[in-house]
Length: 135
Image 1 (spheres, rainbow, N blue to C red):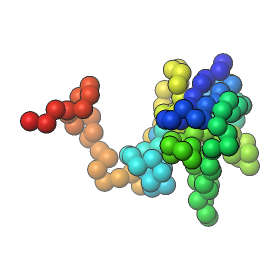
Image 2 (cartoon, rainbow, N blue to C red):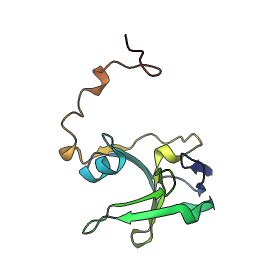
Image 3 (cartoon, rainbow, N blue to C red):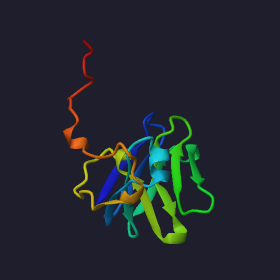
Image 4 (tube, rainbow, N blue to C red):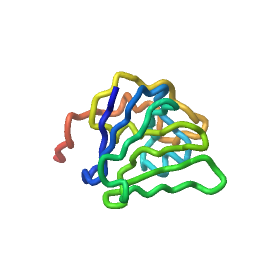
């Protein structure tokens, strides 16, 4: 199985060949900081392979000192892209970077003990199909 992905500007494109083993929604403070959101949404695989189709020279990887937290991103648009964690023998793929549909559903919410204080009861917040109109 091959899954295609890219960054927001389209400069970085990639294929993931193989299956994802887990899909975690991580609420740790590191994932919240690097996504600017309530959680990171990352797919993990120890068997899949990552092939950069274009823009590999635009991929920057940041490793947070004194942690295992790593983020790769397009240096042009800042979009998160996959990270190969060779020392841990797996790849991490931001779910939002995928262009193809995937069958796997989130496996678990993790690091709930450090979730943001406003991250609760969100299913009760009004929802819109697009940007709400002021007025």
